[in-house]
Image (cartoon, rainbow, N blue to C red; front, side, top):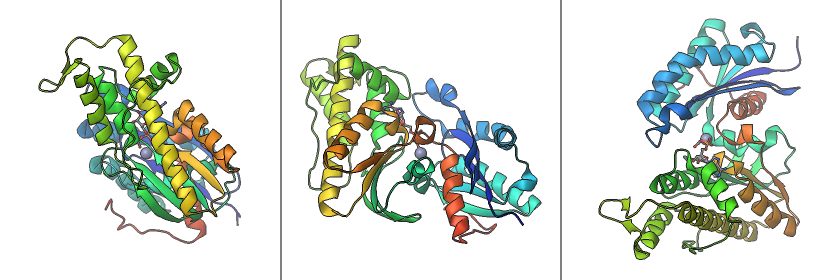
Length: 341
Ligand code: KG4
Ligand code: ZN
């Protein structure tokens, strides 16, 4: 009998189809992603109906590629880990039904995974992160702070009351007439002006570990109105925004979000002095400026800092397979009644 476990991870919670093979003894063997950014770009955001239709078309190919790249077959897989929530219902159902059909037909074990637990442990794929640690997850759909005590043991310390951090980048980028997704472009524009804070956008409440980014979008808009550059009624710039203005907004926004993140880390560390390390995960953690700023903050406090490489920051199936592996180790399997709620 073999003494290691092979997990197939499947992730379809938003606009992507991802599959990964994880070995309990060797780690990630493959990590395949089909991203539909191009299909949604012209709409300035994800269109759920387009997402799920395309996922149905792609899922078989993506899972086959993951198996092939890992030099595995369906016979060598022990267990299927699949994202069941949170996400777009139609998209989640594509991955879940595919996984259930495969589990039923090939007599495999199945485990339903919370996408956010996947992000929260994504730093542990590549690094040995000490417990307890603090995890800041920032993506297009979520912004949360977790106190992580062990694999699968965590408490939510704070989360967003409205928009996620990535959503703030995307919506403000759209306001500035930049394409979707806004985060990478905002980072590039901000770098061009050396990450200066031109407009001093409000940092919001300092009493809480929760986040609110919809107020930031409104603040950016009213700051432009005050400068005579934007018309609220038509939601249009009075004149096309110049490159210089885009750089200034982007840079001020990025510095503002950095300050909000650092404030929440500082407050958490004061409340939980036993924390050993900080992790920064999710799509927004691909931002090198934010990564460097949080890393410097941790170094000054003698804390270890970890952030996954880019392929594990944005949505991926390796993080789902990784969580599936420790859940399998704990015997936490699901059954075929598994649903997306
Ligand atoms: O984790 P992710 O791929 O998908 C979700 O679960 O939402 O995150 C996507 C988000 C988008 O909002 C995108 O604008 C943001 O991550 N993002 C960035 C950067 N790269 C991606 N935000 C800031 N700076 C970046 N370099
Ligand atoms: Zn995500």
